[in-house]
Length: 418
Image (tube, rainbow, N blue to C red; front, top):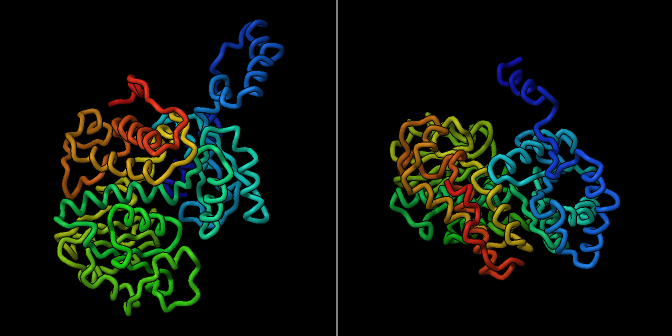
């Protein structure tokens, strides 16, 4: 058994199985406590909620409770291993919600025969929660599932594998292009991968100013182009009218490479085909499309990011999803819209440009971090993220008209301002 396997299994099994538990928020020591917590006292908030459903936010934990829901069809880089096998990942997501944004989260793993059955199951339990985080659901079903649930639920529904990845990628990529002296509007972008994360990343970059005709997406058959007639709808969005067919064709003169595919799929020789001062996001986990050592050996002018914490510039969804939910739920947003996502992008990228507090350096176990090639995006342990991102998202929800609460208190998240 490898060292990491042994440590991981021990971590998950001890001192008690799993990573989350339920804690009481009210006293339950006396007969009077129990009379208030349950019968007869509990009847009073029941009546209030029956008369006004919004009272659930006042008398129950709904407003601070996230459901982390999966069917286990796309677990990390492991594939379709089923709902139960996804439970450690979903518990881990719940842990991150609590650790970084003080949101309570409970994991729910759903067995189903059809996509519609999954949608119905989630929609039917949605009122229990203040937000729904969908996780590890394969494409193309994930697109249909998320859209249907957004339409049917009155609380935020967010597929993190799509939008969390896209938001963090966009924040880091915009900063990297700025350092390299390039504009996203003029940049040629190659995306290796055509699944949920790839499509969401490219859609977010378009919203940030990228030109759709400058984007070359590749799947297992090569470049996604307009003369392919078997393309599903999510790939047709990025079918380019081009004669380029291979990765090497697409990379010729390209400014940006985004990999959301698999390990070691970007040869160093192909990297040399890119334009001067390229940006490479090799985000396959746990092994990137090209190892940083090989990339830097091939190109000294590169800015590189990966999904790993042991290299500079980690693209990590924890930089955004806890805080997006924090901000959205604090103003009771009905949805998480584009305005809120773009606000998160800007908040994240701006933090990286500011001086880094000593306590963040200590948590990151480094002596110095300065905005530049090896620091284009904040570290996950940066305590400024919660307040800054959540506040930006909440304000965007208010300004775009999707929030039920239309003013943030002056002391909003005062204990998380960093």
